[in-house]
Image (cartoon, rainbow, N blue to C red; front, side, top):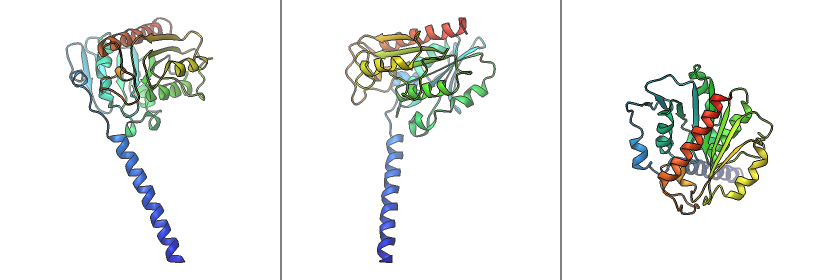
Amino acid sequence: MRWLKKRWWVVVVGIVLVAVIGFIAWGMIIPEPMPEALSAMQSDSQVIISSDPWITFQPADQTATTGLIIYPGGRVDPRAYAPLAQAIASQGYLVVIVPMPLNLAVFGSSRASSVIETYPEIQHWVIGGHSLGGSMAALYADKHREQINGLSLWASYPASSNDLSDSDIYVSSIYGTLDGLATKDKIDVSRELLPPDTTWVPIEGGNHAQFGWYGDQSGDYPATISRQDQQEQTLQAILDLLQSVETNP
């Protein structure tokens, strides 16, 4: 009997190890960023880019006083958001894309704290993210209301445990009308969790994957607008939020 029990524990441990290894592999094997994203990882005359420990985009000709922290979507390479980050930084804002453990923001929801500590010159902070990254950004904003001035959600919504409806945080919820994952119904349910003055930005014909530059995504619907068009509308909505935070802290 003793040898049977020992053998049973060996089997259980083996199953657990296989499951853990499989989960790690699942998190680490992700789509490569599209060429447009990789091109946006290069510094130019307007934006200085560094990639350690975060992917940081700084205006080249001025000192930013407002910053945006971006949490990537689940199993999305953080570089997939480089074109958007570069465009925002070119308008005078610090932008920091935060890589996540196993490419899942749920394992690194508090990482914004290190970013905030590193840049004491930033007077106003906005945090945002795509999909799972947005939900974890909402979690962080809820737990750090004194530090966060704005929340930018892209195809995302807070968990029911993160009720921000009574907060003074400026919020913008940007979503595609053809999103097969963060559907309009799910976005609508989130309205009661966000402040009454939240800005809602539907992108007609936009989908889930086109908030980044990483290709298509399983479960999503085909977009009827180009990725560039969706990115431009997203950019404008984010800039509007950043400007609101700057002028009405």
